[in-house]
Length: 225
Image (cartoon, rainbow, N blue to C red):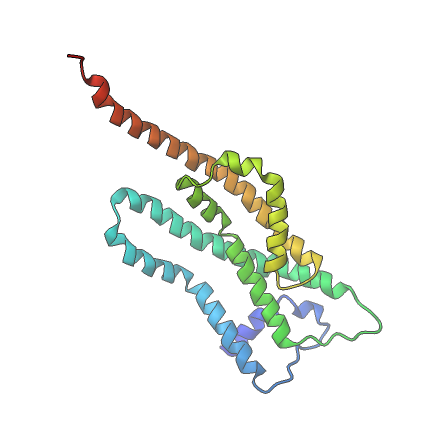
């Protein structure tokens, strides 16, 4: 129901409101919030079904060895996205709100807009869900031979800067706490991607070596006239 959705999104901030309620100043705000929240939550909860439909469309056109690769990738994409959303909702969002609302001033009275809060919360959860797809993207680039683990390791310092800049653009808040709350997991995912990319790179190297050996065998087997 609409109350369940609102209460679900309010949960991270309610303990910090001290009995107050979120406010709205336009008659259509409640409907706007409910519509946006329903769409986003529907997409998140329907992610496994959407991926299943994509798989049903792609499966008939794939070979057996391709299916063995695509299935784990699709499942990992869903799992990582949901893990990112869960981490944001249960850990990062409450900590960020607690930090921001702890900065009090006697000259200011907090009257938090429902629209601003829900946009902030939803954007934060979606940002973490998308960021958690980084390992899949790096793994795909490694499997295609576009990057190597050595390249990723060599540019670790650059990756730190990229993570900070990306977090600054992605996070809905302008505070440093939100920035580092996203930048740190993003860099951890980068390091995880380097580790996983090593396996994909070795597998690709072995496959290419096997192909070269198979193509060279007929020529070496020819005896000189």
